[in-house]
Image (cartoon, rainbow over all chains, first blue to last red; front, side, top):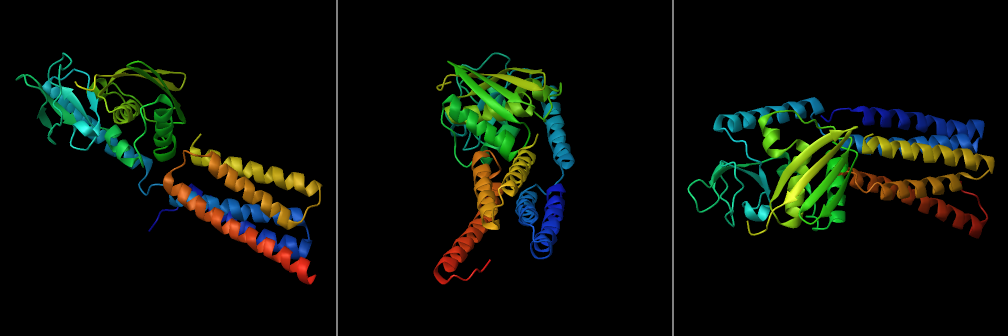
Amino acid sequence: MRSWNTYVWLGVGLCFTGVWVAPVAHFLLESTPITALGMSMLILGAVCLVLGRTRPRISPEASSLLLETSVENVSSILEELGLTSRGIYLPSSKAQGVSQALVPLQPNPPSAIARRLPKRLIVKYGPRPEDMGLLITTPGSVAVRMLESIPGPTAAELEDSLSSVLDGLLDVADAARVSMNGQAVTVRVSHPRLEYSNVRYYQCLGGPVASIAAALAAEATGRPVVVEKEEYSRGNSIIQLRLLDEGL
Amino acid sequence: MRAYNRYILVLAFLFLLTTVILSASHQGLDVYFSVYLIECLAATLLFTHLNPRARKGLDRVSYVLFAGFLLLVAAEVVEIITGVSIL
């Protein structure tokens, strides 16, 4: 059975009130403004009921629990392997149709990444023996799958798509602004509700919001992307991304 | 503030403002309903970042409201032709 969230309760309350206010005002009181008020309550109630039905069935606490569990598990793997290098977000064209992040074993940035990486956890991405790394599915990878269409490579298209994911689909931030300057992409996210914590996973791949921004940027431009910096100030998050060469 | 809350607040504010303004000019129920419909459609269009499932549901609400508007128009037409007031 679908759970009754706040929106559904509000919708039922408004519809119930509107259903008796409108006829009573129209037939007994003969007041047009109060009848119209009842009518507006009915419309607003219907809107609330529709919005309530689109809320996820599992609670935010349960979602947070799942996210934290997976982050801690991947962090343990990264710490166990002693990985400290920055993760590279790859577009789906480079990772078997799924947008994923590559964490190289070597701290130096890779000189080349194979055209199409196999769908495995441990992958060999280059010709040298040390060109090995972990191919990880990130929150951004899943967010990219939720998109109806892949955004174009311009800042405006990326901004629109990012706002749609962060504000509309996931409801984890209020808005996002994107500016591009050559290979540097700056994303300003207002009031992010997914917090950054100082664990190895976030140090390598960035926080959840940065991960979503990087995965979307990689998919939009078709180029690998690295999260350079992530800052939080006055309730806003500023994420610096760097686009790597397409042929990398 | 969450997108859903913003949407509901904007709609509630618009409906309230409409009711107050139109009550001062003694308009009929059909005018109120038409303005509510236009406001609902405009607000849904402006909130472009809403969840696609929510948009689909809101579109359904708009269809029902539009059907109500067509009924009002039909009632007005019947009244003009026959002289009999339905509403």
